[in-house]
Amino acid sequence: MVTWYPPGMLARSRPVASLQLRGIVAIVGSLAAAVGCSSKPAEAPKPELSVEETLAKFMRREHGPFEKHSLQLAGLGTASAEAKTPPKVECAKKGNERHCQVVLDMGPDEDGDPAAINCAVTTQLGPFGLAVHHGVGASQLAETPQLTVEKIGQGVAATFVVNMVAETETTVNIGTLKLARLYAQGHMAECRDSMAGGRETFHRVVNDFFASLKLEENRAEPFRFGIAYRMRKGKKTLGLRYIYLIENTEDPGFVEYGVFFHLAADEKNWQTLDIAHAVVRDDKGELTRYGVLHWPHGQGPLSLVAKPTEAGKFRVKRVLGTSSDAIELTPKAGLSTELWSAPELRRLATGELESYSYGFPALDGDRDPSFAYSMFSPSGPGVVDEKAVPHAKMKDGADEGESHELHVDERGIVTKQVDATLLTELIVSSGALPELLSR
Image 1 (cartoon, rainbow, N blue to C red):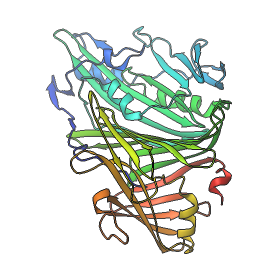
Image 2: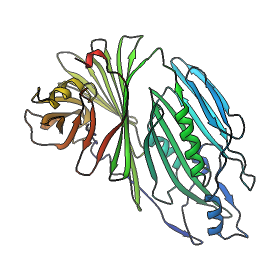
Image 3: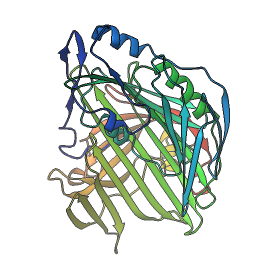
Image 4: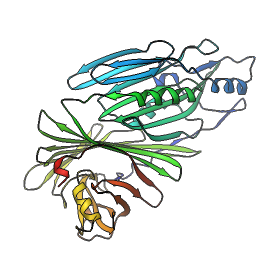
């Protein structure tokens, strides 16, 4: 399970700013426009209460519990959600894509300010970190953000929470960005709000909503198999990976999608990396397109796409903004993914296979389009060693490259990856591998 970081990709980071503002830690920047939802940050008058008292008051705010309401999500499934009044649901369909918006009324607080949690359910999966950056906008953070990744209902949920404060000449705007996403059965659900405080309310309402979702199958692109991983260092969660396989009924074959999110944060700086891939194969499993997108700290995307041409060659194209270039290259190993390599990993884990490699689109040291490779060898019963190697250094028995220890089950699915400082563990597995991968 290699995460290939293009050269220079992780050079950017944003500070977690500390600004002493009347005795509290605050940030300067726009919050209300950034989060894009109906729950607005609290506007604190300058007055009777001190800033510390006002901040504490807003951060204590919670709502409910309220009655639960049944929801019909046209063509997407059903759910239930807690709200003060019946939730507002609006759905739309475009081709095979479906989307429903759900507004959960949390009622007014003690000062009469309205509060709501905005949710959506869709067949279109997006990068989690990009949504985080849209929520943060031009602001800086007032604290180290909190990330949780857990199994909920039919899938895996990631939740990002952080306090933000924006000062104007006459007011102090206080908000808590709360963003949660559920990846499940080839669908995505999202909820967010920016009300100051309300953490317990958000956690309760959103987790119950995610757990209640009963998703319908997309008949044009039936879900076949999905796996989700949590990445952590000790007890600190650092990211997630969600990979799923659909069957393409209109153009017979398979499409594998994957989303990856990683957060690095401390008291001074924070940065994110999103990676998404889409690999298209025909009904015999032959690869016809391999696409990868990178969003370093909300920037990009950088696109890499490899397509077969002739005589075993591939055209690899790089696009970043208005800049693009391409090269025709013969890979030194067949292009594939960890999921599609399940048969080979299973044989490696049982000692039936001595070595195996596959390639994938990447940038070389000069940031030109190229390939990189994952090289595997047995390490013990159920354990496989993996190394990441760039195209220029790829050779049989190469000793170079970062090494990972993979624990592999009887299906050939990686259940755990152990690195020097990071543990990646399987927390969700659903569906069944196609017969092509059960050989």
